[in-house]
Image (cartoon, rainbow, N blue to C red; front, side, top):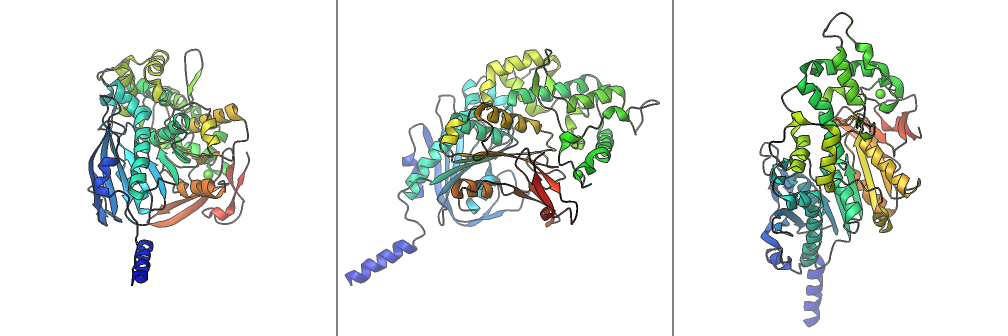
Length: 496
Ligand SMILES: [Ca+2]
């Protein structure tokens, strides 16, 4: 009888999906004093719709322990974060997901995706609510929270809560983010190299000060002089001319450029010969186009930030005219000048970039020395779409290149950059844009298999219309010259 009971108990333990050391509802006791757990409860399996996304179809989620919390490392801090812990079948890993723009919201769709795949997942609002920089005015500590403290706090507390709930911490922790999320990932590698074992940093906004200065340097002239604005119809005209000149250079006329930097199209060839017309660009418009392609430079000629790439013209919305520059870019100026009413008409690249760097340059994540992250066997997967017009693709190339300059040329065993032809900002665009970056990162970190290529797909009408390998920079995918150009099998990664 006793024997049977022991066996029964043992088999119950083995069969039990989990033996929580601390029940979900009691996890508040596991939080440090400056963290307030506002809610910790088991959510049964069922449909989930992200707040504010009522129009989207709900996703089915397994049962999980949902922890809603606020961290206040300073008196002025209010770092909202959530940690979602699978009630069953936890894969033993933590995935922290990133934000976009000025953040100000929990990344619920990414949390849900992580949970569905078996991860304990965490996300922060970065310390304020609302997707713009107005929070920064009068709240310098909250700017620091946005810059780096919120993600670190969230990660540290997520690990503690995981350890309390499962009676063991995560065996591996990953960062997954794009745009501001890419910046956050690089910030972690630079400032808190112990936080993550692997980092996906897509289209990182890591040089935020320079990037927003570039944004205004191309936008403001078209707002103060409407003759310089390039209407959408002429951007389409320009794009068609670029594609006509350069699309087939990579062997396939597919609507995008595999290596945009090989394209030497001169926009001056579109100049209007007999007055403005629908099929040409005026001299001031050509000047604008050239300014967009070119890097922003100081008056002394120093490069500030790279320009946009040929092939991306139809998405140059910041130079089509209008009444104000992109709000997300103006945000850095509002934060630096501590002034909600900062007037973009006063923009001066040299002076303002200096002010931005002096006052809020700590938002940048541009340190190229990642020795501590590398020494922990950390893996860093960078990606960027060549048709990204929110963050110039050259920024990722520049950062990657500076890491190699700093740490030596042969770093391919822990850092790789993948440029995605035709892809827009983080996804979208006209090229193949869906990639399982996380699977590649995990294979790299957990099995030691570095990604020699990533499989990218493009779906239309719910079916795969194109597959294409993404190659580690500076390699690019070359068409072998025969076979279906929509099939990745007919491409090879080649050195330039
Ligand atoms: Ca092409």
